Length: 161
Image 1: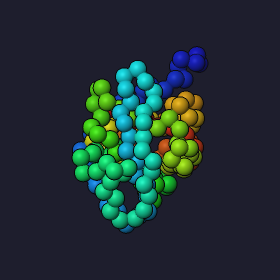
Image 2: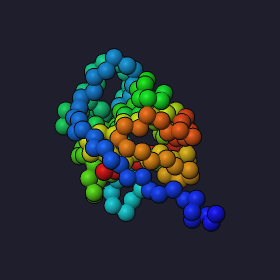
Image 3: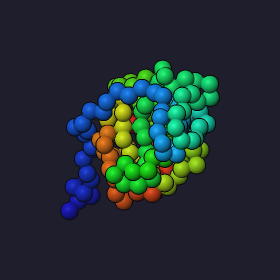
Image 4: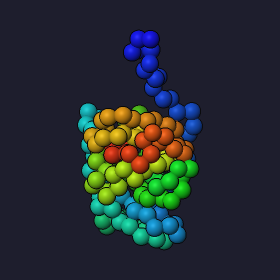
């Protein structure tokens, strides 16, 4: 077999995620981060400091979650069990808007993610073994119950429509 025959085709999502707005309210302890969209031609975006706790989280760094969209939620276990962190953004994913975290060490969560859900038209989740969206990667739709070989080995991620 030739190497190009071993290459897997790019994942194309077949599901559509619901549009979900803030604030965050959950009995589980988790963190919430507000992201800026990744600008065209860029790989990095700005982000707030994580705000963590149980119950209602209605603002992050003085920004009300009421006017923001839930972009993605990542979990410590497969099958979207044990929420770790929720990411919010100012607009849903679209052909010109995507989000990501180039280095999960900034959130204190490197090598912790095992599953995720995408929201607000963020239908393609891609996780990477290394920071800066490099290394082995895995892509899935908005209901990603496992990252398989990359469970607990995620160092960066991106979502797109």
